[in-house]
Length: 223
Image (cartoon, rainbow, N blue to C red; front, top):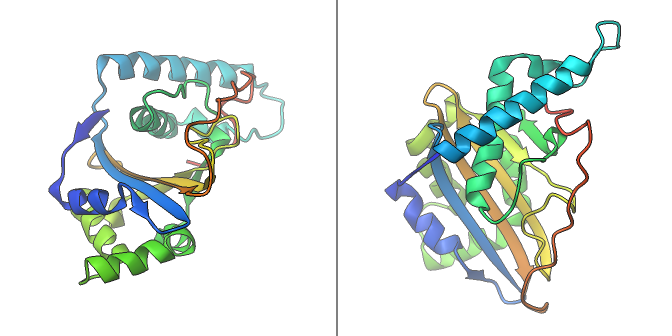
């Protein structure tokens, strides 16, 4: 994946970089990537592709419909791989090579993203109006994302990790989310990663717990 610089995202990233709201601090970032793979990305992509195909090959024709049947489609496999590669660029110190596909969810529409936004970023939105003014935080973000990737042509995915697959297990962490806006036509992804930490907690990171590798690594993702 190739990082793309887009000026429309800069003011939003500056605002969300370290937003102190008193008892807690929000850290968020919007990033744009093309789906052009680098050498390292290409190696991981091939590895993930082989892993998916190996898993599919273990399924018997007489077995009931598998939750990974959709991954028999090459387009769906490519989408999953792009999302995993994007996570790797967002959190370069974390290994996503064994991430489970069921931790990704496809949102039905923009409203799914808006509900999460309203739930977790209402205080940030009020701070945006007070300090920046003009359009609301959501409106400004929508305009910026649309300028980069054309929202109407995008599929929206979220990454909802369990405790073994969360790259932001920070002390005092209250919540986190990761959204991906994927435009197949443009072969481009815009990510929005955000998490909140308590200002009452300690500093530093909790140790990551290695997840067990098993045969359901790539199960249950609806592409």
